[in-house]
Length: 336
Ligand code: ADE
Ligand code: ZN
Image 1: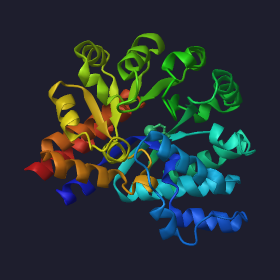
Image 2 (image 1 turned 90 degrees about the vertical axis):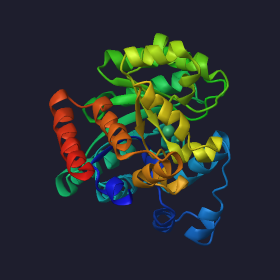
Image 3 (image 1 turned 45 degrees about the vertical axis):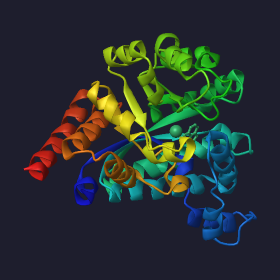
């Protein structure tokens, strides 16, 4: 199974680029930028990764961003993720970034997006991995701030495929950002939003992303299984659900393998993703492995999950078909 998972061509649709900041890179950037870290070694930093819910994770995640200052830092962060992704046979990735996590520290929007974009271009050329970029708004900041950041992105629309919504969901419902997402849609961007697992009012929030925001995809969205009518809507709209098993284990103490099985049984387009792999110490292959081990998923089920990611990726039909052909060929050889 390990070989089967490692060699399978995959897409990753839910990864926060700031969540790929490895402790070693953090130390290297801190040294370069003359920033004092409150830890003596990368191992000590990892030992301090003590999260048990979304807020305790986010606190450490935002603190980690302090070492990212110059364009070259964002370039290196992105390049190193894409290098790792290519080594895991990820052929296509859609990356989230959190500009408000940087502009609030005095780092310019342009610095952030230019560093990321240049690394994406180089990775395509030199590593053969294709990727797209999704601007995420921090839902615990104001709708005005989100709108300001969408407007900052206007000169860079060609570099973006969509917008998302992340950070702390408590008291920050999708509707708070209705106008921002409506404008993003007008500008031709795709829409997605986090519906993190076991959040307060989660079913109401999932209802809002479907009916009011009219998203093109849902990040996590696992609790939709509790409502037959939400499942039916998700299925009717053929929306993808980007589930992140190891992340779920950290924030809700469950890999959600039973839930992922149920999604497949219901014909929902569930996908497997890593979320914040440097913090959760698991990239995409490790997520597939952990899931397979816990839920005893068959090769056919793993192929379905990997195929779903290409189906719901923000690619044109020709590109999707070409990736799906590649996956089908792999599956036929590997399962035979
Ligand atoms: N930001 C980074 N990872 C996140 C997650 N899993 N949920 C919400 N916000 C995030
Ligand atoms: Zn996420």
